[in-house]
Length: 146
Image (cartoon, rainbow, N blue to C red; front, side):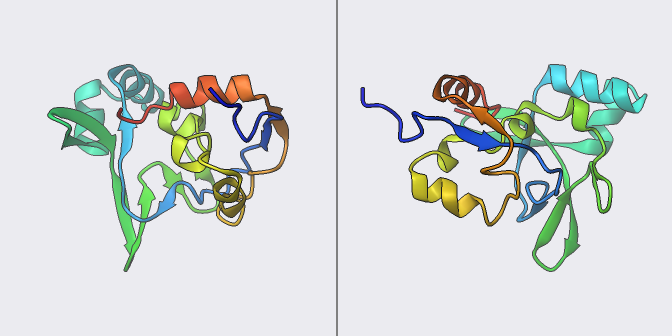
């Protein structure tokens, strides 16, 4: 197997800009354990949490849970836990999918894809230097459906 183009590592430090929390509608996959942690943080039971903050998505022959997003303008949606001027209101318990951004396979295909991401995410190219090994571990357990 050939060496990854990012063999020397990549820098990333979340700037809490919220750009990954807003934009096009999508799925924010959440596991049962993550639902439990988020419900506890918000002081609600799991049933209430699921009713208020999640939706069921049928994908690849199975039902999965996704955090809802809220339409804020014509083509813009915000994660229900994103608050303008504050950022992610559940940052410490955010789902794995959010924790592993931007080290997703779609962003790591080649150097050009990573560099293009810098215009969308102000934390790309800044802060902590993640080794290729660390990146491999993160992208291997990114919370996204396989």
